[in-house]
Length: 253
Image (tube, rainbow, N blue to C red; front, side, top):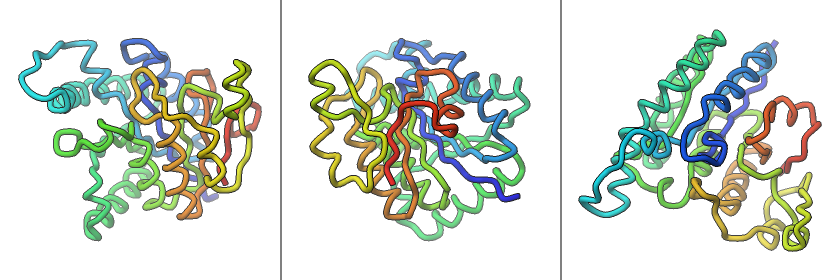
């Protein structure tokens, strides 16, 4: 049986559960769901959180621009983030691997082929690729994307069946309902054109993307024929509940 391939993008706010440190409980929740679903689905993860992981351990002096400090924090935090994934997933019988990518990789045919071939080998051998931006050499996602665009480009390259973006809301809300304090999720929408009038430019506490970057990511995925779901990653069982269609989330077809 051919398994369906899901690219799961996890933002910093999901991984920290909107606190100041990486939540081992949340990573365990994600691993537990992947283990339960592994007979039907294969998962590739794009994970933010390196800077948040570093802040648990160090406080750097500002010997340079803020962006350079964030790059240094990412370099410190990335091994910690991977260790937390590895430890929690290994207890569930899951194996992890690390892939660091940058946007220039997607502009180079040889690099794209290497990414695709490497990830396919990893998945075929039951290693879950955990992808992050190579923040030491690239700054795009630190500044404005929180890995949303990186996730979409990777999803398109790997021709996944579904791009699932985990964030801290139940998908995209209608602007009017959000203003009124009674957020209503837009459950299904064809394309992204009609969403611009519903989203705001505000960004969440740890993340850098906001909903705008998620809609832009969905547009990239749609061009590749891939559906995007925006789900509430703060809730337990968010992957399973979305797949069973028993949670509120936005499907962009």
